[in-house]
Image (cartoon, rainbow over all chains, first blue to last red; front, side, top):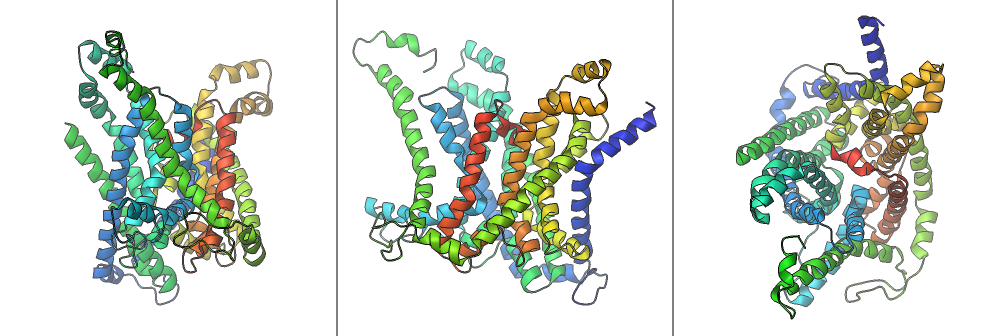
Length: 281
Length: 293
């Protein structure tokens, strides 16, 4: 087979699967960019310009941006803080490990909306969580945890939903670290804490960052859970985008917000990676 | 627990401090963790089941910890007076179609990714992951504009195309991992013995690929069943799927009991499917699907 033929075969083979994804997403992204520049306006006059971009940076967009950032950072970091010790715990053999593993994996199999509903029941105003705290005497009045201004309900749902995924990632990262290093350190007299601090933790950082970034991006661009459990104001960026598009029929503004979501996701991902690599140096 | 602590235990004749520690760490702590996990994961599930069984004549309200009486009234009600039956049919029509399409599209590409070395392979891997990484609502909204342009909006075919896009990453990854696991020599041996391409595929590759195909199909199927954003933007109001019905009950018209019924309808098949997959497959395919992201 000649070289040219070889390349052609490769391209033909790659086209159905990878090409499908590339074409669909490229079409959607090109459409977004064009609409944010005032083109492809289905309802009004299409005219190239930066008018949409001038309009989009208003107080409401900033509020939505700040809210999404806050919720995404809080959920993804808390999720990691919970997942790491859990993954360390899962490294050992212990009683009924099989059942423990099976139980904590359950949320992985649940659709986001179902997870939202399940947690909403628990944290409702007269839900079991509030009742429990009141009976224990920790609080007098039930806490308002759904549709609250801080997005606490959303954070709770996201942690519950993403914890198994995050734990899975940390577990596989920890498993991929060579045990020779750990054994060598133990032979030289390092205690468990020292092994963790000097070997496991630094070596697991790159893999863990991937996990945090993935969870962060998912939460940052979330629509459904914020609609169901989030505050009335501010909306998440995705909600604001959707409202602009399908309620106000202002696709130009929606396209601008879409680009803001994508670019800020990328910037945040970069930032998290930078901070992590700086911290471990 | 660890080897270093074990020898020192035998020194104390009674239940010494170390033995006590061993007992707590070995038995008590794991049991406590298991209990905690069951409460945190199981309690919300139990509450959903209870809410779906509340009898409207004996409402479950503030002071009662458990509903006073259970009945199947709500299940009857939801099936009779809401669009759930139609939504279930739509969901279970789209999901197999999207799975089949994703499989057909993935087969050649996964083969190429596993067997060819070429520059830009990393970029291909990133492109494959994009449908999962990109914010769902952004993709849904602007794909809906493209579909409007192509006259695919509000059509079943458009929904299948969209769901295929979201299932492809799983299918491609799982299939290409399976292809990678097949030794190259086997294909060559088959051709040496005179097998044509068709028989090589049918008798050699497909049987070895079966676990990967199975896992990929389950993941694509479940992704399609769960998908909300795309169906919501492209399909409603013409087509309702189970997630969009659930969203309606959770959003504007919050009806807890109906939402409980629909949640269970959506969730139970998922859990069963993944449970079967977990039993059926020897390798830990969850890690294969998510782990190397």
